Length: 185
Image 1 (cartoon, rainbow, N blue to C red):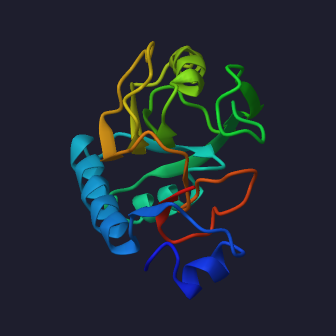
Image 2 (cartoon, one colour):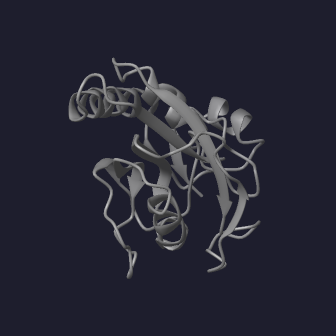
């Protein structure tokens, strides 16, 4: 699919993309690999909780957990540092806290993209205080620009260009989440 194809323009409401960074097939193959890696990383019989950071991770998370071939639980949290802009506000608002207890569980925190590191820097200490057996980060995209990232992701789908990315759950003012690929505005 091309960024200026009729199908892409229909999906974006006529808004032209600069490029398609990762296509559907490339994403699916990498997500399958990551799911297998995560499944092998944790001992059988020990509780695994996959914690999705909404809203951006929801498509990635749903594809990822179906590739983890072991028992697990899923819960969510919602944090925001963007509002309607294309750069982080620097302030993280926690809008929804997981309902599942994290104590004595292996936690995989699933993030759509690590860029400024602001959200993770706020969430990691808060989650660690809840007594998990382990806490690791899995992200679809990593921009490698965070200056004070307190923990690097254990699993990274792709290195991301320093552009504003949309699609496959990533949005701009709530638009474009439904794109089956990752594109650049």
